[in-house]
Each structure stands twice: as C-alpha cells, then as structure tokens.
Length: 309
Image: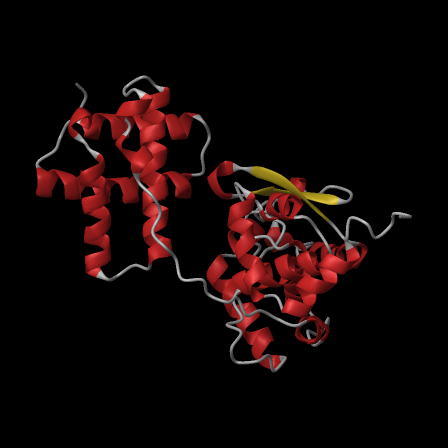
C-alpha cells in the first residue's frame, strides 16, 4: 500500500513532465495538500487505500463550516481531488470501483446573473482612449483585445511575439491547453498601430534587451495582471460605465461570450473560443442575457426558417 504523500509527489511530477504550467501545478499542490492535511489530522489517514468517500465528504463539510469559500470555490477543490484520484486509477494504484471520488457530487452553486458591458459602453471605453503616446496606443490595443477575443487577463499577459499569426493568435490557457483565437479586421488595424508605436518606442540604445512578450511596460518588461486590471478600471471610470459593472478583465470575457451568443454562435464553438473544457462551463453566460435576445436567436436559427414547407 502506498502513502498519500508519495502519490501526491508522483502526481505533481507527472504534471511537470506533461508540461503543465507552473502556476497550475502549484495551485493543484495547494488544494491537495489542504485536503491531505485535513484527513491526516482528523482521521489519521496516511495510506491511499484507507481513503473513503466519507472522508472526502468530511473535508467538503469542513470547508463549508469555515465559511471562507463559496460553493463555486469548493467545487474547484473537489475537481482537483477528482483529478488526483483519476490519475491514481489510470496509473493502476486503484481500481475504478475503489475510487472514492467517483461518488462525490458538486455542491449547488448560486445562479448569479452576470452583468456586463453594453455595446455602447464598450464603444466609449475604446474610443475615449487617446492615441498620443506608446502607453495610450498600447492600452487601447489591450482593452480592445480583451473585448474582441474574450481571453483571460493571464493569457493576455502571456502572449509572445511569435504567437501572433496572420489572422489568428496562439493562446496558452489553463492547464497548458493551447487554442487559436481569430483576429478581426478592426483588431488587426489596432495591432498594426501598436506594433509601429512599439518599434519606435524601443528602437533606442538603452533598450538593448527587452522581453519577448507582445505587450510591454515602459521599461520593456512583461505587463502583469495587476497593472492591466488598473488600466481597465481607469478606462471604465473615464467612460462613465454603470456602477453595477465591476470593470475587471473578466467582465470583458463576459461581454465577449454574450455578444457571440447574441450573434448566434453555438455553445460548443463558444466553449472552444473561451478555452473551456466543456460546454457546461460556458452555459452560465446565458444567464445574463435578456429574454428578448434569446427569442431573437431562436427566430434567426429556427430549423424551418429556410425550408420551403
């Protein structure tokens, strides 16, 4: 029988060999170590064969009693525990029917209505950014990028020069998953303007070594998510956006998803563009749409609409 601590180390080593992102591995390690510490201290369990579904449920109940995390966060912890036990089954440490995590169900999550930007607010945010300096031009391109592609802010930070293709961009998402996103004609126009400003900005002797990321700060270094959050917040405030919209990069992702749905995209294609593992994760974006939008999509894509019957 194997110790849980040894199997956790094997699991994380396998993640490294498979090329998973360091941040993703660290997050898995943090979640699993919390769970292991709990079952070791409360139940005295050290061996994997001793873990039962009741012990995992006990940990879930403990997380709920602490009251520090919402159900959606606890469900993320459950997903990581499931991933660990799936690895153990695949590696032959456990039989499928011995997997205690297979009986664990997700907690019910609050169905929060997603409030995001209107088309007019997006237009104001982008058009009100001046184009006088490198920083202005960069900010305009970045903000438009978030709205037009729906990528995560961490993915925006990680774009490198070689990831830019003629009409698409390679995005490295969660869990080291890669996908391509389309560059619209409007986005390409803004990118060309930014690339010219970037070349001019860093074509100086004291900028001999700049980092190989597409979006750079004034010193030629990679921009980080905290800085991009601040840039967007400032631009949202300047555009007088409604207070109920938080104005964070994830709201741009919400806007992208709902705009795509209004334009009639199918859920599977949208989930691919967003980098979701399955379409069920994407369905939450429907909750923020007006009923009139849903009916319009239904009319536009009626199965009999183009049939002569």
